[in-house]
Length: 243
Image (cartoon, rainbow, N blue to C red; front, side):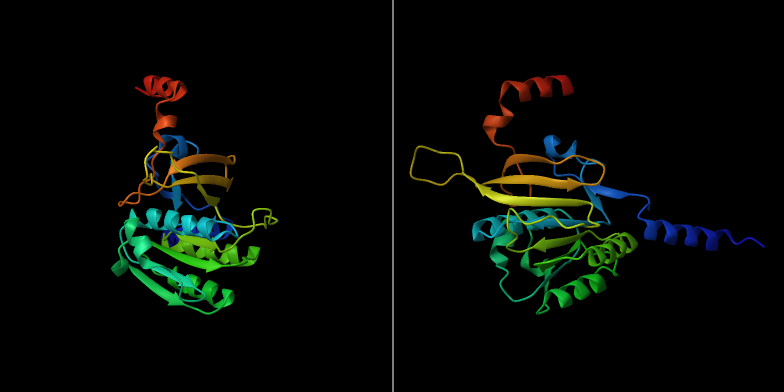
């Protein structure tokens, strides 16, 4: 006697274990230059992503706000798991991630951060789960990827103080990003222009590495291209063809 429901569940579980589950809706950045480079047109939902800054504090700060901007554009609470209490909530708020949406999990060590992440990822309906760690083993990344696929929640491993020349480790993450502070536009007056970041997609499953200079998140978590790049002739030609 056949049991279609049981067979379907088994197929789904096997697909999850093999990493061949049906892809969930992607979250676009809203910048065609980036979105067209990502399979699915954005960040894959129900998947693990890695983000790093560098050993420089300004780069880690940029990467933190980059993450906040992504999560600000997804509905639901955010679990942010970290080793010690050094997350600056007002900076997240400026990127659109309100403090009352963020639940801090102070875990004390990388091991406990990863355990907390895996437990949080069992619960659907979250905007995302972030874990700040120094190192991530291949086995741990596979566990997080499976948990994210099962619940449909987006997971982010934030590798704090990651050296630029650090040897890349094998990972089950769908994408790996490195975000660094870049010089802002020179205004010619005593004032500060919108911050800029050097955003590098170091690894993407099914795609190629690439980098962009972008303007930092606004109050809704949205990135922008610098006006100089938007207005250059090649970009204008690209818009004409797209239109």
